[in-house]
Image: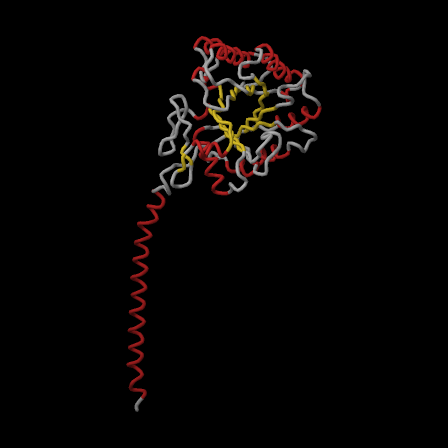
Length: 334
């Protein structure tokens, strides 16, 4: 058989087959490019789900930990340094109040001085009102002690007062007491601006506690925007029982009243979340990663000032294992 005669035919056949494969690959590439041209813009334009990203939050930290030495509060210093754009409102509580002396002791002086060196730290003095049952003169005296700290050193200055055990059930006497106390905080010498006031009833209070009287506002310059209210201070389990889960695992808050900021389907607000705080304790240690970010993001939708801890008792007297994870998960401004 003449093999040389057959060789050109085989070569022509091979080139034809290769040509078909080449044009097939070209056609497939064109189809792929068309798909990408359609899909990529849609992926950019369309959100991954209906809910928008949570708004930026702030941390409210009840720092009821005695500073035994200059390392006791190191977790706070590290968090402040790691997130300089994140604001921390830190409650200083030497002894269920300012303590018996006119100034903090040496340990507190050193620790507070370190805290005050951070621009993103706002320090508040702890004062309890006993749900408005405590004598008003005692409450005002505690405020006066905190205000006088700045006369001992500017680094000891408080920027406002955290009023614990605030009343939530309406009573004209209780409303009057809280307005008297708020007025003193806004006018007493020694407290540094912005003279933040936090009421902590732990639940949504009667509307009378959310806004001062018009006459008082005109006299002192106070307004409802100057007062932060802790409208939730309970356990993680209670939070879940009070609220509904969405299909994506996020929480649709049930904390909705005519006087409280509520979330719409798009994550927007019907009120002003900047005047509310939520504090949740007994959070499961297993809540981590994306789940933790979703949970903290849901809290931030309802309140600007948030705090969570895995501690199941003495909630604010030690740093929980999730402290830095929580700080990292708070929504930040982009």
